[in-house]
Image (cartoon, rainbow, N blue to C red; front, side, top):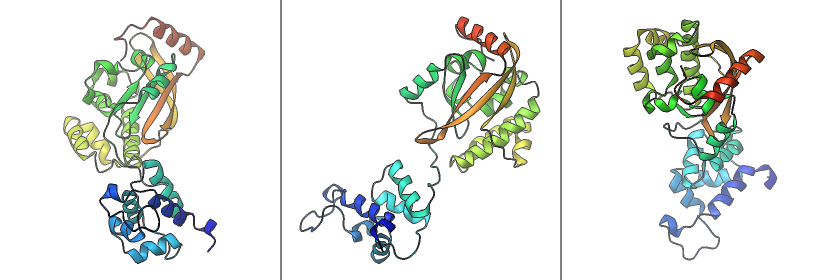
Length: 279
């Protein structure tokens, strides 16, 4: 086989030669080549040395996702390197690994802040809001005034009367949110991590429990949204969602006014905003 046809094998060989045996507690003496031996990688990945040798040589067929994941850990691959390994071995990226809600990076926060007159939030795969800009506080919700646990879109929709009353057609919005949340949680690798949250919300809101049991899923990439704002009145916004590069569990959602009149009202509100105006 031409070396150019065995990109997976070439990548595996390159990665193992860059590892330091001594740092992994392996004997470093009497090695003809740098890095780990094939049998050492195989042992760390809990696969047979013969099979791993075949994999590097381009023999034996495609590996399973589980085996590639073990090899990635054995070779101490970063998330980007792990994704590259899956693309070479299976022709697709690995499933997204769920990461508990954290905070956005300073660089991403600067992106949010640069959107002066467009409300923008960063949402996790479990619909926790972990980043927002000044416009979002003025037009949507003053997330900074909420405890972190309450900065969740489903909690707000089902449990916060102000947010509920701001939806002109609450039931339609709620059904859409539940269906899109289910799809995002699965896509973000969080399907098994949300059960406690689902159980809690189901106990607090029979309406959520009934909608969750419907098992609907919806896409939430872009669309329009109407809200009743305490200052702006009824206003229509267009929204678009973007996956944050390097963090497939995070989405940047940007809301822009859907008309010139709405844009003028939003700009005036944000220019005068001093906190506490959101829904």
